[in-house]
Length: 187
Image (cartoon, rainbow, N blue to C red):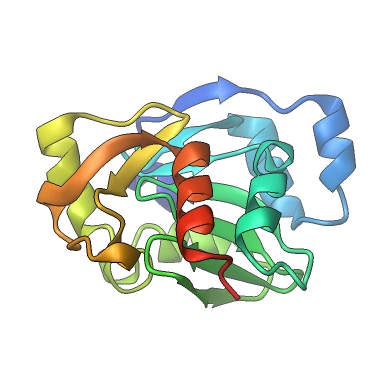
């Protein structure tokens, strides 16, 4: 399972394995393949630092404060640019806090397809997760830590430019909170 994903991105860093109570809390609420991924590889950093698999319990309150979560979506990953990936119950949504919008990026509950086909495809990353500035910023600033991402300074919503030169390493939670406080909840 996830063979293509790990062939493309063999290096990863596990920060912690999920506790039994975390697995129990999300069993039946998230696709079984995602739970299998957590069991096998844990929460940590993948895709050359671009994708962080996270414990939803640690990000859900912030997500609910910054996004109009009417569907009770569950955060399961954060990108290197602070975008949240959520499970809607039947699809994967990307919430682009930096730009103030969201988008369904994969329908269905086949997480193996999402990892092996979507995340391993350069076109998908470019079109759906806008990873181009991440690579340039990482080359200049280094890889953000597990609790960090690149954030545009100043924020895009108040006139910042979407260029790699305007990215800084920021704490994920504080940055998303700042965006929500400054620009409001994404609806």
